[in-house]
Length: 240
Ligand code: ATP
Image 1 (spheres, rainbow, N blue to C red):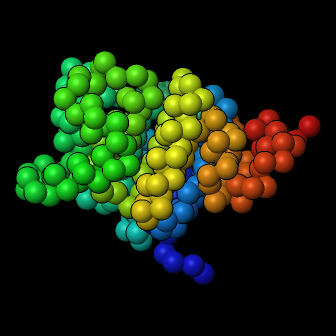
Image 2: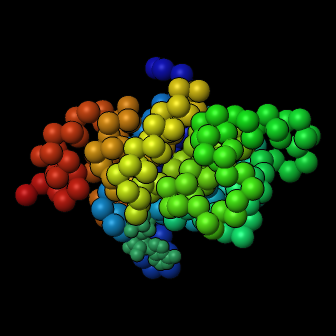
């Protein structure tokens, strides 16, 4: 057995009212690893993120972070666990500056010197966020806003970064820049759970992958094995 997983999800079930959105989903992310979660629209990817972050109620199964069970822990008590979430739709505060957005991602009451240090770390990964520090976030390009959303999540200095559909709606050039930055984040030792519809980009970076299909896990294994299109089709749409 390898090191203790940073994140371990076991037998997870979740839903909305009478609707079951996830059933029996298990996955683990080891320290420093990149794991892809793929799946078509409505497969349950965002529900999985919500269940991990404590925003969607878990009906069965468990979520553990570094060996501690947090299944029932309210979302607002999960700060400090080392898991940061970058939600779908790059939700930046449009009227605040780039710098103000970043500061909101840091723990409250962080001493000024520590805050500057974290800003410098994020600026190193995303130099454009230093160049645009005083600019209102709403006036950034889509790709820059997505960088800001990731940068804000990094201000918490997570050990695991969960990214929900970060390439959605971006140009290929912007997606390239973002993925290059994510590779630097990973090289610095941060594990990444990449939830994506952009299959190829994501598989090229990931160590392992899982595919959700109608709320169930239809594939879990090496990311490289899914580059064979037949296996990917089977996992997405079921065996013919
Ligand atoms: P997408 O890529 O389109 O966001 P997804 O894989 O993230 O898809 P989810 O958003 O997790 O999928 O949705 C899984 C299922 O749960 C879908 O059938 C969706 O309609 C349903 N669902 C999601 N959120 C809610 C909600 N708040 N209330 C009711 N049903 C929901």
